[in-house]
Image (cartoon, rainbow, N blue to C red; front, side, top):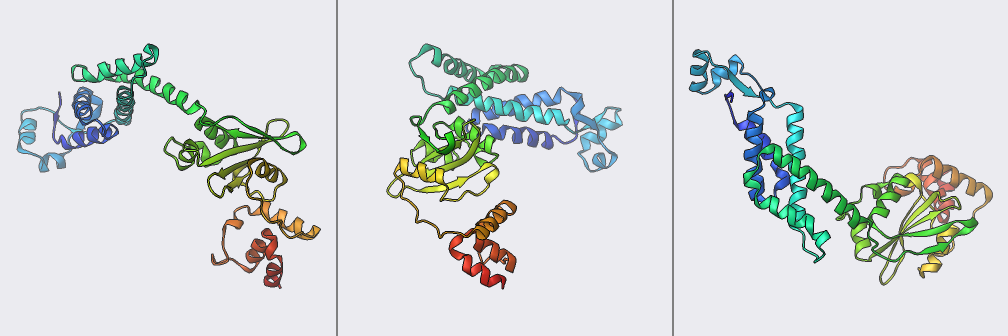
Length: 318
């Protein structure tokens, strides 16, 4: 065991890793002791103390140096710090399994009971044993989470769309994430506590994806439920804006009984072309307001994206 001139950085490192176990103080405290012992037994986590450190350090350190002993300073390797955080996170997964309810099904309850036994005897294991068993339980935890996320939260439903396409209802948390990855938007990182997922779980919102005849995703829409249901978000791939008057969106609205929108003013061919070009070139401009310091051209662009303000946009350009 090395003569460590200052053990406080070691305690800080193990305490930081144990933060993942904050919900279980007993396991967190035991983990810190195991982690400290594991760090001390790996010489790669230490270097010879500098002269300045010895000069400002405790008397025993200078006395040990005078006797020819090596005095070390803690400097963990990158792999050591990463391993501590990883094992702590896996132990947190293990504790979550152990705290789960029993279903009465022996096959489903077996991992829960095994995790409970491991947690109960955690004070008898060393760091390497804890790491090995925590890895196994963490993998089980991941599979259990995947099974829960794949469970249907509402019945599947399909609504016919134009040109052989169809709207498909997203019925699970896993389905929300899959569509998010496909469309390259924030749905991809949805968690069980995420606002979108929370709305899906309690039935406050429906999520739909429009696919063409070949199955490619074209539009993803979120429709709120309740007293006055409506489409709260409608986006294309990579969050490209989609008109609320899109024909296929109107078909879905009719099928769901959503309140129809008032028809927009008819555009001339030139106005329609300008609106489409601006929307493609600057898809985020429609989210900005006239108070956001827009240039004269941007004011006109914003007006062209809203057919009701075409006259305003033309006046600002002149």
